Length: 634
Ligand code: 0RA
Image (cartoon, rainbow, N blue to C red; front, top):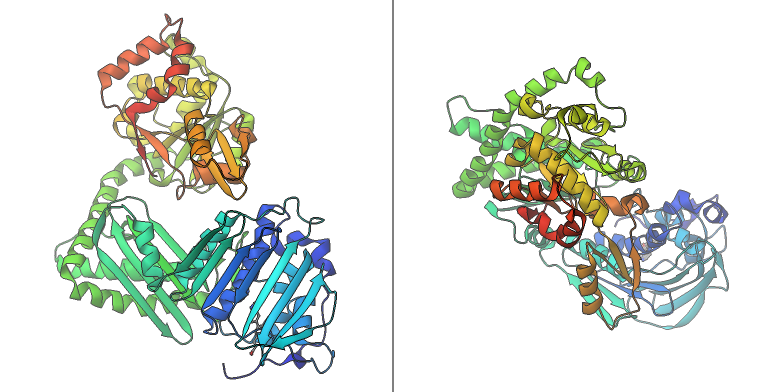
């Protein structure tokens, strides 16, 4: 740091009243997410001290009295008097909007994300807040309530070292629920520790007496290890870090046998879910390096490598630190600094190329993996082109009205969720990724195709909507090349009725589109049936047994709060997304026909005309019924 902060630069002070009038504008809302924004804000202020090299330990305490304390050994918030306003800098920083940044002239800050609004916002939304600072040989304290000081800055005693301790109690007039989730805080602390190698973050949960210390000497390399866990690796791990022109770039990556790509990107240790300019730089560097390598190695004409081929199976952590991060998009989770693309690409590309040349075994494995992806794509391309042609305007017009289609026209990345009823349809539409996920609500129990006549089948609206959406046609007209979605996901309520509807749909597919099973396009979503809250920790259970197990293993902890989701329609969209739909977090069952004959028999028995005890059978066997499917983490 070359210059010192200059308090005199602040002329107009903006009070905190607007924050209390419209908290949502500053912290996104007043639900538990908003509540936790206060924690992220307080934590980020300390992490910023660490990013800028002034702090190496942060302690977060979830207090028994409902408050939260964040302590750091940074420089301490300045306490000197502002020449014009005749108030200590600390008081100005705590009681006015946006003043903290003006004092601190830090090179990197996480501000600009959804949070980064300033520690004063935490103060404004807390019924009580105390700040203790060690600086200039003394311990200083000041207290506040709802954004205003309740006393003057006090010089308490002589003290060694420097640091800031902030304790706040969220305002019950603002927040519907003021209970912090130690689990969420620990997850966040872990990520921050991964992204800031060497930083120690301790989280104390006074309620359970648990303490977790997060410290990763190898930073994002340790993070990558965790993300890889048991995934089967291809080649070896690659790590890169460099600082050029004030932009610090760190990458850790590894290819796997999985087909999914898992790139976690961060800017100034803020998670960028939607990627953005830095992620584009990574994508360019990786694609171009591998493309060049393959072209040089294989003289003869090869299948060209696309960016998606290069990323297939890739698990990566990208973390960059840059002076003025600009976050964009609805949730401000996309980095929008154009210079970041070039900074990442031009630094990474030559280094990654050198690495591959120096590690021929790894290079060979990665090239093999990427070539495989390219070949698979080429093989399905002609089929896909066919689909594209046939999904031209005339076909598009015939899509059923209640289908909420996805934006993508590329079947290989598209998914269709079949849900039961309009309310489930509503919540799944809110929870989906509209680019790649389509939702088709069907009404009630669809026709039992096992016992229905062909005419009845053709005239049934639900069946028609299904067949049109999927695109392949049914029975003898079935044409796989017209498939519009790679994944067809049956998503029914996690109860007996849901299992029944799943069975009806599976029967329909099995009888009229069996190839979809053979090719592995049919999936069952696994929405939870119960939510169990133990104060801070949240568990989801898919059935009674799992719920009982959770209750048994977590016995002795706080009194559990049990919630049974009556249906998908009742589940908040965010929860549905998190537990069931988001490809990064969900787990689904892929239904494969291992024993076609036995399956055929089971369907005939279960779904035929002559099935008096069918309902009971399904009730008892709904779990076993799904056992022909293998659990996949998709
Ligand atoms: C303004 C200026 C300086 C540091 C800070 C604020 C600061 C704020 C927080 C919030 C939590 N922990 C913190 N640590 C520091 C820089 C003061 C200087 O130049 O010495």
